[in-house]
Amino acid sequence: MLLRAALLLSIASVVLGLERYVPTWESLDKRPAPTWYDEAKVGIFLHWGVFSVPSFSGEWFWQHWSSGNADAVDFMKRNYRPGFTYADFAKDFTAEFYNASRWAKLFNDAGAKYVVLTSKHHDGYTLWPSPTSFNWNSMDVGPKRDLVGELATAARAEGLHFGLYHSLYEWFNPLYLQDKRNLFETQTYVERKAMPELYQIVNDYEPEIIWSDGDWEATDEYWNATNFLAWLYNDSPVRNSVLVNDRWGLGTPCAHGDFYNCKDRYNPGTLQTHKWENAMTLDRDSWGYRRTMSLEDVLDTQELLTTLVETVSCNGNLLVNVGPRKDGTIEPIFEERLLEMGEWLKVNGEAIYESRPWLHQNDTTNPDVWYTAKNQAVYAIILKPTDVVDVSGLNSRSIGAVVSMKLLGSDAVINFTIDESRTQISLPKNRPTGILTVKVTPAHGIDLDDIQISHKYVNHRMAQE
Ligand SMILES: *[C@@H]1O[C@H](CO)[C@@H](O)[C@H](O)[C@H]1NC(C)=O
Ligand SMILES: *[C@@H]1O[C@H](CO)[C@@H](O)[C@H](O)[C@H]1NC(C)=O
Ligand SMILES: *[C@@H]1O[C@H](CO)[C@@H](O)[C@H](O)[C@H]1NC(C)=O
Ligand SMILES: *[C@@H]1O[C@H](CO)[C@@H](O)[C@H](O)[C@H]1NC(C)=O
Image (cartoon, rainbow, N blue to C red):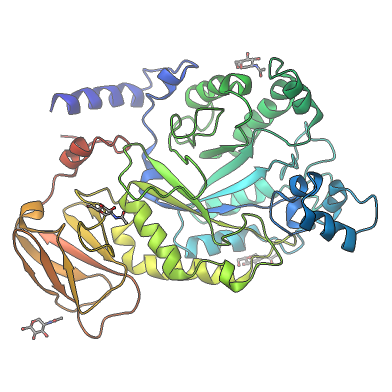
């Protein structure tokens, strides 16, 4: 209990604002992450920008084309006049059907609690009127609108937390390329472009997530990352609620930040001691919209929900990406997937939102059963339900006596037998289809703080005693 007391003490001093962070990872890493994020579990990621105009081969199109990728070169040769440049696509980034309220409603119906939009991807085009991105922002060329601002307002009106993706580097920015030629011993690009933009989006839109990317060619010192983060945590308008990911320079992924992305589609399948997020995309092959996407490229609902369950059981959040079209519409197939996730969460969300890791994440013998816990219950989430489900992680040694088992979304009584080594759960014959959740109520409760201490994970504040 000493550990717990020490933890509470350090949390209390932060909450009371007694602590200021200095620009070192050692100091920044001590910050307890705001709790809303861990409780939220599900977010929506949006990759939208000038790349949504060619909508061919994804958000890396410009890089593919300019580096001589045969498909990209051929696509341009066949469809565009000689001399056409990537910048020429921008005037066709029209967003004429972009209705941020409609998006926000869809994301809310999907059961998401936050949304993260690409404020600027690696092509450098900003979705807000950036004064340091002359003629290469959504107010000067293309939609002539503040796309970031519209979504910030609409998302909040729907009760969603609003976050922004921001690419540190820009493939073809001359200032960046000059710094790169100088082996990153000069910081002209950081000083004139990357940092002014980061400070501006924080001050103007108050995002509660800064989802940093494009960091990997240089160190966090080049990016001035710890200075920015110390300001963000100490003095910014979002200092009490903001979280950042882990992409702040070579060596930072999976090592620093409020939550770790590690790599794209990270899904380790085991409990992680630091809060993490699985950023994945409904189109297996792309984050940005692709007109050549076919049905089989799209994750089906079982795959999506399986990923969600595995992720949450292991202490992760799921960030589900969709690539909107240039006109601001979202593919109906994405809409359907999101709404099916929302339908499932309406019934099973009790086992997801605000849940915490249990003793076991997946079952020790049944690969189709994953566990979460909340309050005084354990949730066994069954990916492929059968009439009788055999599990061994759940037994009288791991949970004690069990008062009841209940199928979420059904009134049927669940029959079960439990002994020292396993449980057999009999599901009703007339059960709903798809992934099901059995809520297990033990006679003597469960101490989630003790589980947290024994599993050594750190993201969740301990209950006050
Ligand atoms: C935008 O979408 C919302 C929600 O679906 C709707 O109520 C509103 O009328 C739409 N606005 C426009 C301009 O179409
Ligand atoms: C880095 O951040 C510090 C503190 O805000 C600032 O004084 C300095 O000018 C920044 N350097 C660059 C290159 O942005
Ligand atoms: C589930 O747990 C077992 C041991 O408890 C482990 O060996 C196995 O790799 C896990 N399976 C998955 C899919 O993560
Ligand atoms: C539970 O057991 C009772 C008594 O054996 C039986 O009538 C009932 O159908 C069973 N329910 C389920 C869902 O298997």
